[in-house]
Length: 110
Length: 121
Image (tube, rainbow over all chains, first blue to last red; front, side, top):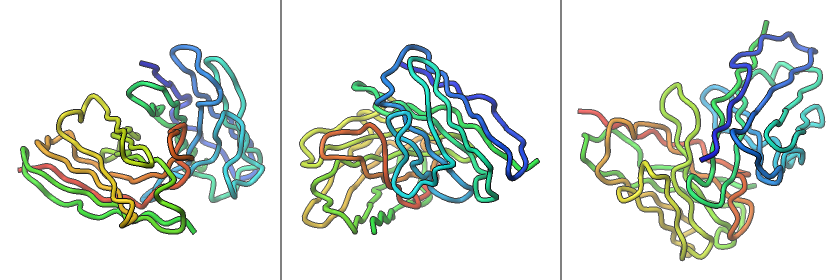
């Protein structure tokens, strides 16, 4: 079973700054199967990035994903007030568990 | 506009049962695989189960296998999760989620707002 480790646990930044979030897989995974979600308090997760670097419908271009193998990154350039939230990476595997999530990174206002 | 509306959550005693429903609209429900993902209070996301567009194939997390059953009624645009032999550790918000195509589960592109299931005596 693949384990996804996200770091840091919490990122304290100011609006306008750049956020760099890390997701490390316990073994090499296909970038086709790596996604990122945003979740705000009391809300459902929202898909941001799929296939490691493809933005989902309606996602602003200040969000970008990159990486391959075991190391993946979500970058948010110029944080907007609405970007302060928890971010999860997720991997799809062909056998159970089909979807594996990382523990999340909270991006909070400094 | 894609909409997913969960219902059926509530308080149940350990060993009891709940049936969650997810009413879908805004897309051709019968053409997409669907999933359930849960989130325990203050915790992260955990995949629970997925089902193909036709309903012929189902998949479960080890933690719920044999206790939960996913199903769908494409004539009613509705997804279900029958939860039996519930345990305290099943307490969570359960999200219904749409997958990107009929037989692929690489990610969940739309999510409902969730329904809370609480297992407690």
